[in-house]
Length: 66
Image (cartoon, rainbow, N blue to C red; front, side, top):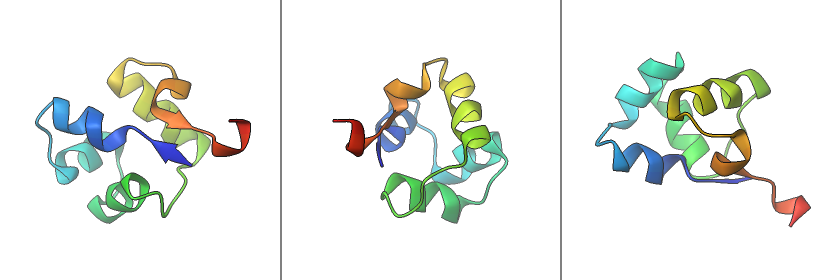
């Protein structure tokens, strides 16, 4: 699954560690999601959407639906 997490984080000048703290996950988890090596759980995706104040679909892109 593609995502815009790295771009959104960079726009806010947040480190991976800062984003991880805000989401309640490890920095390694944020890194893996940003690199597309790990798909977040639905609760984590909703948490990210609330944090960035965006719909989930604007952050996470389902390649299969394209």
